[in-house]
Amino acid sequence: MLPENAYTATTERAAPTCWWGRARWIAHCLALYDAHYKALRAAGAVESVARKTFAAYLIGESAGADHVTGRNSRVTVGRLQHRVARSESTIHRCRRLVDRIGCRTVVFAGRRRTLAERLESWKRNDRARGWAAVSALHESTALPVDNSAVETLLEQGFGTPPERSDGFSSLSRPKSASSTENERKRRASRGTEQSRRRKISRAYDQKATLLAERCRRDERMPLWVRRITRNQLAAALTRYARAGWLADDIYGALEEFRISGKRLIANPDKPIGYLCHILRFIPKDVPPALLDRARTVAAQEAERAANRALFAEMRAAAANAAAADSPGRVAARAAIAQRAHHNADHARTRARQADEISRAHALRARDGRQ
Image (cartoon, rainbow, N blue to C red):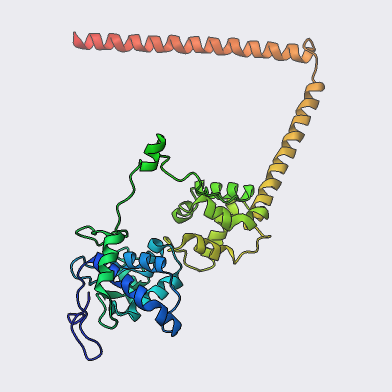
């Protein structure tokens, strides 16, 4: 919140005035540019700014101001870079130029937040690192301007902005889907320019892409690792994938980082950077799970060797076995048949005894009822 005297006069500056409208303010600034820029540039008072860039900056800067007064403009440099499509240094040059011609007054200088302020902001899901400067946009009282030039600029192309202009980065209406030229040629509009260069996606190492996909699907990985995009993971894990790392090695690196006494953040601000920070402590030629894999391979090889020895012994025993009509096998079959006959007689005897017991219980129950 701004202090109460933000827009009142002080000993250092006068109170900023209000603008007459967004479109008029833009035209006013451009008229000042046309009238005084060459002289100021020749005197070294301002830096180099193209008129087209300055006009785009004025539209973007005025989009965040109060539509009635022109005050409370809190547009950040990053947002202006996106709207104007220029570098950060160019945005700063435009702001110094508009300050020099006297059409912008800063009532709250932007600054970086303290640690306590950032922690308090994070509770509200605000990850910004600083406070945006607040300014008032108004017509100049420092340099003279020709009002007829302002009116001419208004008639030429800015038109009338929407009633509530804050949030709009453009004053002109978007072009219709079917232009006059398309109607003359009697063909449908293509929607986008055919000559526009298509974006070519970057190709990553096949091993790195496979490792990244396996890490994203591994349920042992922390949730913030699985939420990293495949391309970002592939770019970060390329050198490790080429060294033969697997998903077990990435998980082992995280475990080693935690076991070493360092706290593993559950929700880092920059997951990919935090993962690179963890992996940089482990040499790429020493995968964390390499020893475990060697032990597993050795155990599997020992088990296969034992199985091969057992199968060889069984084959040898089968080869040395007696014939089907040998005396030993005949005696064994006779013993088995005798044992089966004995078991059948025993089962019949037990069934007969159980039947007699049930009949005796039934007779006693009938006598008791009588």
